[in-house]
Length: 291
Ligand SMILES: C[S@@+](CC[C@H](N)C(=O)[O-])C[C@H]1O[C@@H](n2cnc3c(N)ncnc32)[C@H](O)[C@@H]1O
Image (spheres, rainbow, N blue to C red):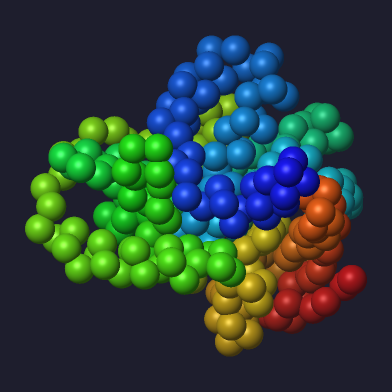
């Protein structure tokens, strides 16, 4: 029996129907803010909630120490640069947990460097709206992400899971009549790791990666991890984004694109991550592949 429940639970087919207690975001954030020394215990708990949040088909999944190779490539590049001041852009950074890892890795390896990191993500806010029967969690643009009915939670507008026929049908019916319901905003969530918010050299901006040119800045390093890949975007969209990145990079700058490939062992429910990186340098006005 345990093997069966583990199989369903760890592969999410059942967990889909349980409300994930998003309210815990606030208590974990407050605790992390007050007791940063408990980070190794609290950040994974916080990341578990992030892993459940899906906005426009992209999960906010992130976790500590998943970009070790990427961080190392960036540190080596910074070490080789003549100047000691540099600007980094982290694209699709989720709650900034991995941005913080990068910041700390640079601080430890290159104490004399003055590095400013800008992290952007399309969604760094979420709000809870209470209704008489159901509650809704909505993203920054006001679109519902999840509908909560007591202990049950239904991702909206569509689940990303394979066996989601029943779920999609329920949400379709719900979307027909939700306009008639009344809601009251009860809570605002900032989907940012509080240790990031208190790090002065990391600037958080809610920004679409297809509009990075609006940042009005140039960068020496850009990285896009677990976002700019064919799971989420078409080849043309990826090319458009990378042309934009190139336009806001300084000559000789570094662009790293990483994907953590998940190898799932279905029955055991374990997930192994493999960090796959692609490295480019800006030369003659274009991005040239290095590795
Ligand atoms: C899977 S997470 C990756 C987080 C982090 N980079 C990592 O590797 O752990 C992908 C993030 O990209 C963000 N995202 C998706 N589309 C985006 C867009 N068009 N512009 C900016 N961010 C986007 C999502 O909101 C999500 O937080």
